[in-house]
Length: 550
Image 1 (tube, rainbow, N blue to C red):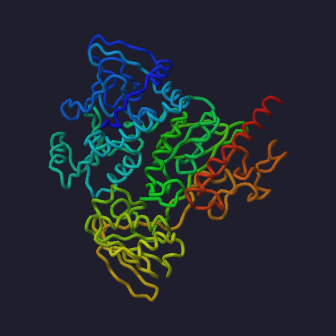
Image 2 (cartoon, helix red, strand yellow; image 1 turned 180 degrees about the horizontal axis):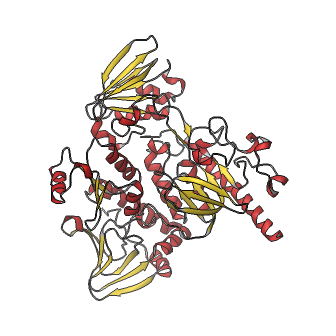
Image 3 (spheres, rainbow, N blue to C red; image 1 turned 30 degrees about the vertical axis):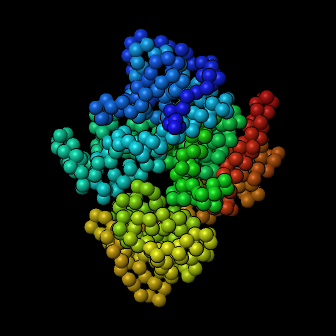
């Protein structure tokens, strides 16, 4: 049986790639790309062989690319650092294709695209599941700082190896060898042995290539937020020929990316995790040439009259003719005095595979009554000894889909605590105890090490204060929902009203959970994101007409 990770390209596809690259002959063994190298090339073997080597483990050869096979994984489209070293053997003849030209080929040739993208995704999954390597992170399993870095790398599919100083002798030995101590943690060891003590998420993103630099130009569209709405807009806009930049403050997926399993999204009868859905959409957008950079957190925005200028917290500046705000909403904090102390150290806002080891055979809590809470409870029940759903109301089915309610009721591990709320958290460094208070006034204490909260929705619009019209809760007003007095008076709004997804400033759109009146579902977010692109086209057409008139 042929390994699907190493398919042979048909001659027709090889001929296509010849048009996008150059043929090179190697008379001696040559390094094609090295571990950690950013923006490395794609290669197809015509004759000879490419060895893929993992330098982390004694120059171990993990793959041989032979005639009609090709190198690379999904990171090649996002300009991430190479995970391995590639060496052309003596006498090899290869097609070399740059990442930009490869994107062109993928966008224009559907059958070629199918083979390459399917292979890239399978290789990425294999790297993350079958190999130990990548960036090394040394830290405590109870450290909130280490958790934040792990969470970021996990959600962005960054290959890494976590060495827990609380359990790993290797981790303690590393610290001794480098004459470092607990005060220096978390510690990141990059390719080449470079050490970075207490790295920021920006630095981690830079090491891995997730954070991009953009040329100084005015793009057609800037999408802010890479949840389902933002990614849908990115896919449709870039596939229709617009120059698109998409940014996000943390990772693709938004709130949907935190869902362990989505079963009511059209076309996935067996369900799909929010993380996998986001990753596929992320790759799909890049397939059409969209530039996606993470983490970029919007800090301020200026409207010049002709275009927008966005300033990010990392100092990056992006100029664009139009904007789609898809920043979504975050789950609210529990109203507890010491909640910040335990965030990332027992209190979490998503339930992913990274949490499973700490939940094994433990008592865990899930706060909330929506679908995300239900999905999290069912997911955690496969690992925890007990899962307690903590709900203020008296009806689990009030906001949760019936299929989830039925499964929860059928699970012997899940216990539903109605008419109660969390009133106290205790623990020295990590969460150890939770106090619940019931409507009648009685209290109960539970030995609980992990608490997952999925309550409320606070729109991520702090960066828009004073820019576009919002309602009293901070959700962005669009279309007919905008008060006439809040409209930005200009040539465009003097001749027409805002389009259905357009804000109080023409050319500035809002979609998904951040928009007032939106339906908080993945399918509706995707619909709004794709629909907004047609409205962007209309606005850009108006801009062109104004330029001609001038």
